[in-house]
Image (tube, rainbow, N blue to C red; front, side, top):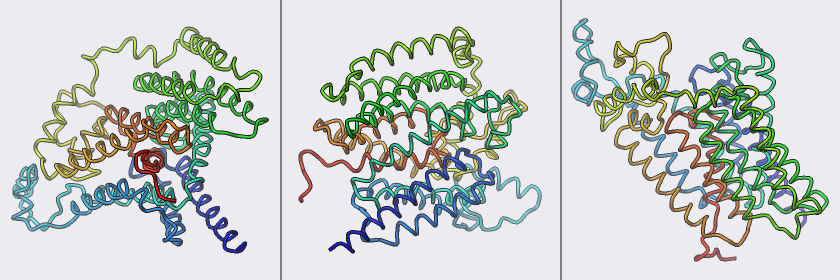
Length: 457
């Protein structure tokens, strides 16, 4: 009886190590959304290797837990793959939005060959290949026993805290610092392992509820108090760094993240096990946090606060782009223009009044860009994803028995909501790192027993 048990433990340790390696690699190499980032040459093959490790023990994978998010991800991959299928000229030229490009070819005397739906098939293929990273993370989550998935939370917390520390070092080193991991990035700002300050702000905002939930997990009495004080110290440390990112969206996410952390802390703290000084911890955190926040705002004249206070909606260029974005979406609806090809397509549509030395690499409204690229099929898929989140969120909120799975499910619901909220003004899930974090959150949200229909023993 001992050998099978030891073998099972070794398999579990191997799969947990592979998933931890994948998450760590995403922190180091997956913080950018550009398709030409050199680190993807290492990250994507590594995710395939990790996927092979997970699939080696096929029968041990809890497919029933991830069946719905895995199905949605597979359907997304199918939609992208269909956009790469060559079509005859008579069909391609009659697709919505494609006629102007066919007319250009006729003008210069080019014979129309068989073409796929996507106007940028190379970029669409890159998007399809990029799905291997969140796909591997989702399968890796299901390959772990239910009691090991909670151990992924401190992995994410450590990675987020290191990103915050790296951001502090970047800001201290100046604009030309070699600590920035990507060539195209927000230099001079604490972006950490990411390339975009808005994405770093989202990661930092999600750390607060993650810290609150992890602090509530039971531990040995001598370590429980220490763990809570460490979480409180990290939470306070994140406050000035959040402001230093200069992200206006980050300010909104910070309010949401802090509110979630407060609710988790208040609802899950056990006064009897709080320790000698535990009863003073919430008040101390609030007081020190207010002092640190006030110092960051009034002494350093923080960029995020200045940008938010001086924001004029009439000068917000992203709002000026919206009519053009809606026109592109309507022109290509219901087939879409092809995933990954937003940049060259927008240059074709960009009005002269909006021309500038900078360019719009994405729509900065990822939900709209998904519909623009994928058409009706992507819109339906997006609606199904939101419906699944709502359904599983209701189940998670009804759980009040204090189990770890219930806590993680409620945390996951908040994290996914923050990612979707950020996607209204940005494109966080196009980075492999945040896509993997979303995959883990979907696993936590799915791995919750329905209180009215308990699983059989």
